[in-house]
Image 1 (cartoon, rainbow, N blue to C red):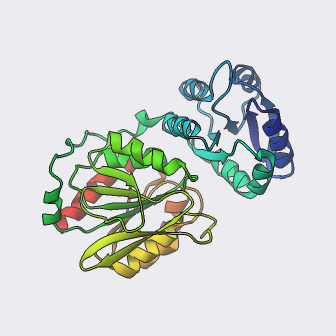
Image 2: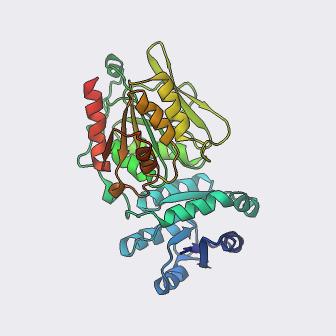
Length: 350
């Protein structure tokens, strides 16, 4: 059965372009469109789509308000189609926290050419979203207990052994990462994260996490040290690798072609971790579509690193963890709310 998609966007150009792009794929059924959520609500009550493609900034009712209402009444997998502006990025992150499964970035200028050039990625995202199980916002994924407050003196972290953590995720990962990090104390091992996310979104996402979590969270810069109490998020549109020199870990942020259709790529991070850290590392695979990171996790596993994957029941999309499990790359499969405990056990063994 084709994936039924309904488009909600106040731009006539976007609606027309989406009709053209989606109508050309036999695996997708373009159900129709609406210029605002009020008209859309009436249409989707009559015929429920498999996926909503939703703009954020619209007159009458904004997309975020509509999304929250829809998730409370009848969750439908939703992909956000948002501009690359600072304001648009911030609200799109709020939408991911409210239960949207993915974000497709769009520019303010050259919109039609951009969407047509991104057709393959857009279609893959919509098809994956149809298999997602939206959670209705972060309330469904809150950790059991809040972490302790961030300590004022961070120099003490250097006194403890730093056995780093590398983590990869995609669809549904923004919520999962937030839930995981909120369950960790301030002096945890350093964590390097690749979350599939458009350029310009990652800096704001890191700021959001930093305001919520006990650990210090920031978008990675080339040469940043990965030390205890620090979480580094790979920038959108750039790869991130782990490096070790003089017993200290740092990250290299670099350009390059997409790997497994992604930039940043989880495989790039995991392969570099296997090269420089060996068994002295924990690798985590969270929810996401596709197989990015599975082969890198196998290298880590074969090098005696500790490897953990999120279980199917707690995943929004059980793609990346499943592929890693199929390769025999995973030591332990855990529900999301138990993965923070796995990090703490790994640290205690140090």
